[in-house]
Image 1: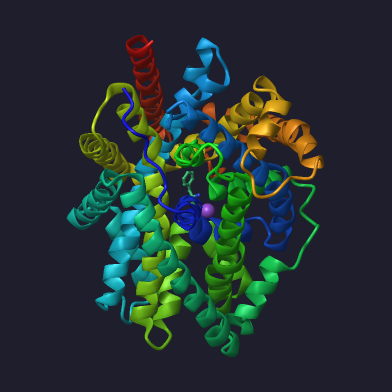
Image 2: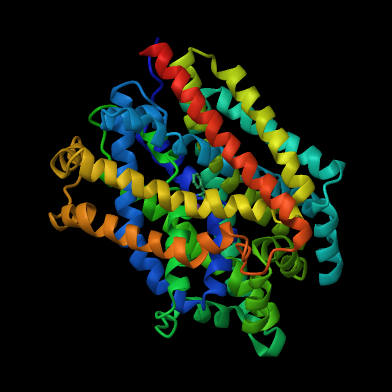
Length: 509
Ligand code: PHE
Ligand code: NA
């Protein structure tokens, strides 16, 4: 029942869309916090190892699975995995590639809506002359879920639905062609402002932005014995490159049979890493260090990504000339980074309903918007009770690693190394050195499997048993029902996904 399949309009459009998928809130909010919390320079060593041995190989695997699935008319993960492995279980494994992006989409768009709101607040001068305490209580008020927070959430969802309704080339690709250049322009300007304006002027304890740069960029091997740093680094690589979710595969399914994968996947990774390490690394942490010193900045990061991004950064920009405009650029940059990623998370599900149930794009997009709003309201209401932290842990951290393991095992082992290698090189503009075949076949799965076991023992089991929250603190007894509800909704989404897959396969044979 497949109409002519969608396709990307141009190669540059494809790369921008893929880079838009990867470059997100993870680069500008999650990365600086992870780096600061894990010792700065000591985080970067396992980070680059994970990039080379996990991130880039998995990027290629996702592209390979996706383009291969697209040949069978499949833009959703259950269908792609079934095309790779002719076993009834394959499609059910693929449910993860539909449920995980939807779960992340729900809280991700909520955070995205804060950046839209804060961009508007910044430019309208709301933050003028506010003290750090006032900024913190402003955020707490906003997050307590008034009409304003819900209003911006609805607007953000409507924009997402509108883009998705326009399809791959006219919606997602066009958004990326506008959003990515704006994002990079804003990021480069802000990085320049941090470097030049804040290097001259020492803040707390005489620290400058240069001390912040030194903190994250000078390699430090002292914490390498600590497993948690390795896990955090790998977790950041998965999240930031968007691997282990099936969204890159969904985008790659709209490639043509002999379009290049290898060079394009590499370009996508390189763009994301530039945005993350160079731009993301130069903006938030050095700015915070220049203001509050290294210890102050680490303490801020310890209070989470939202504190750094939504309290500290507006304070820093407010102190500079044209502060309202700089604040607007910061939140505008976050908004564009966010929306080019959130539309990617919706893509596998839209493809599923179109391909398996002959649905039209608009109604599916609006229904998805409604689902995200309904489930998102739970986050609005229960944010400070650990609801979001559970989702970010189980779907956004553990889920990505688990699904990445499934992907690499299916592609390299079940589909067989020879086929995988041939598939990756079909139409490719570059040839990979043979050693990468060994990396893909042995090193990546083994490394991932090992990390995964470690993960399970170090935090998944204790969190599951409610011995500690994802932040390492004890669960407050009164929050236990909230946590159970939070997990219950995730399980429900997985079950609904599995039922839909079953119905689809019964229907279409
Ligand atoms: N990579 C995105 C970021 O850095 C998040 C994302 C994860 C997007 C998975 C799509 C799929 O914010
Ligand atoms: Na990213």
